[in-house]
Image 1 (tube, one colour):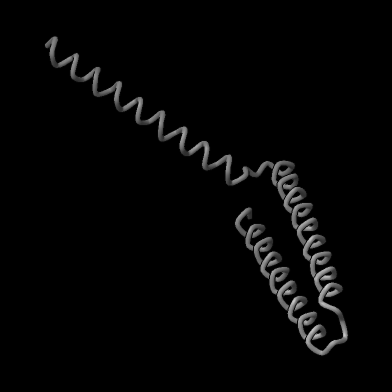
Image 2 (cartoon, rainbow, N blue to C red):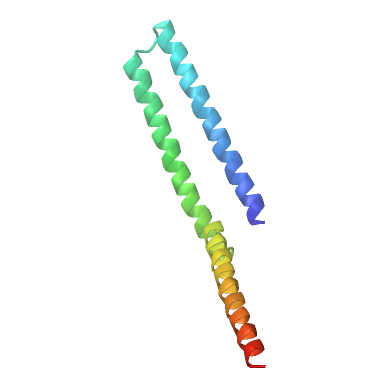
Length: 107
């Protein structure tokens, strides 16, 4: 389910990027036609980008809150735990090798 939610999130981010590109292109055309000044166009585009960035940040925060509320682990947490398990397995293997070597030496 987490993967489905992530895919939904990424689709939204993709749409936002596409909308931003189209927005910029539209203002570039208006500037070329002389209907809007370059300064005005830049101001509108900057405001649009700031709003979409703020919205994305808020959405990410709500998404992570949702994951925590429903007991899902964040990708970073899972990655961190996998790394820790690997480290512990390596230590255990090292100790097992030492114990086996010591047992053979005393036999």
